[in-house]
Length: 401
Image 1 (tube, rainbow, N blue to C red):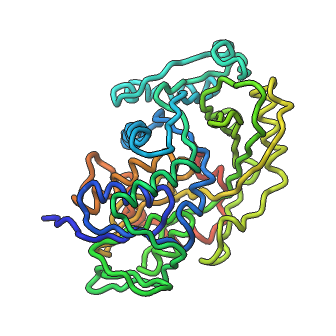
Image 2: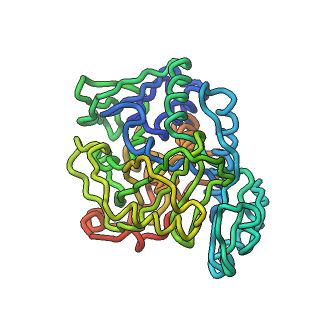
């Protein structure tokens, strides 16, 4: 089938996935790219991201995608004003049993360009004195990994997109689609109708609200995610970004000498959306979250146990039925594409997810096999039953950045 590059694309959702998609669409020569959002640019959960980046994951498409993301984060550090990828490494902590499992992927990871070191017990503390590790705890240090500050990345990417000619329409809610002969021809909004040759739903927590207007749903659940930030520290702390799969938490430095910590383990109940007009800034902090994280920081960084806390933010992460992202054309509806459900790794995915979405839109194929992300994989899933079940976070697989 011959694919004709569209001259106009509307991207629904102005979080990091939508912004990245717009960037790649323009780089691929799409003349008119419009990004619309019911709120403001980055006003959803993107700004609440931990911003941790690693490519040490378990499946070939995922490793490839994260490798592409790291390449683009390095590039963005050079072309986005005010943004820097802090490539301080990402330390992934495991038990002995878990390490045996992840070690099966090391040859594949090396083949796909990963560089890492393996540290055991006291070696971790010797390398990073602020981290406490005991016998039976192991670290795999992703030398290409690190972190970004979402509050700097998002405005920097927006400014770049405006320079590239991308149009932004904020505070414009999608209310429907115009569909003719099983093809989307326009999106109806609170301010009128936008016509284009292709449409991308890059919405995360609200994805089904948008997609259901075109007759499609994804089996996914939303979960609360909270992150805490300390007051500036007196002395510089030498830490990589840390994904602690033993305590199921993460910790990283910030570019203004604070610590940022996050976990969702204190509450594994799915969060029920309060209608399409619900906003992330309406989420209520959970009083259990900070005591839960304090337990982690005392265990992992006892020398920092007396630090003072400054503020914390609340966002949502979205997990599909099989805990894999959803990227590709919406089945049965020509001209409509989706990129969503990146669990807790949405920020790390965004440069590559935007690229893969743009490749679907412009070329009709992606640079490597991405069938595991296809929206069509839910063909035999009873989506409505899944959406109505009170499925817990931990029954859907452990979340990783």
